[in-house]
Length: 249
Image (cartoon, rainbow, N blue to C red; front, top):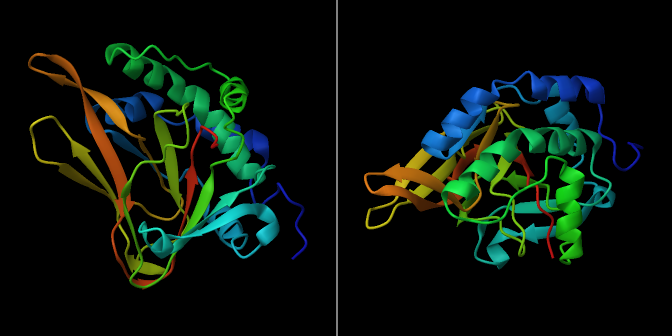
């Protein structure tokens, strides 16, 4: 299979991806993120686009590194970080979704008393990351087999971190795998952790808080801490793409 680096197979034209992102109900997505710390985006990617990304996984030329989770206590399974240039669909989704999330991220930081603000253009934010030595791309693909899981964690890779990220399920539950649910936990001060299990189908995405978000309490706004992971896969194989907007050191 001789596909040039930076391109993926069977994907919609770039203009169609941009239009698809713009047509999403961002008011609803924003409201869900505010209320729950996550929002499901149905059919963000087509079945053909999902399948085209999955077949990239064995290709070493598309990725910069591979991580076997069990070696680091991260769980079981493995993942690979894409190298630059990113596959076309990943790159376009990253740059077109980012400005839609910026108003949410800036509002969150304002009410939490965090001085950082994010520019509307993703290229300008990446320049900020690169100036701080965060040069390595963070979009990744995860692969799970029977018995694999991902421990609860946060994807923070340096001083600069965008507070929302996206995960797209590339496999179809029930057909390709069973188990393997996407899980979020939220720790509020002086309270036990609240779990959230997010049901997804092939091509669906979940937008979620990377590390913390604001919550309105009886005495004002306070921060809650979030972690995410994947429950144990019971059968089959599961692939996911993670779109993280900051780069890594």
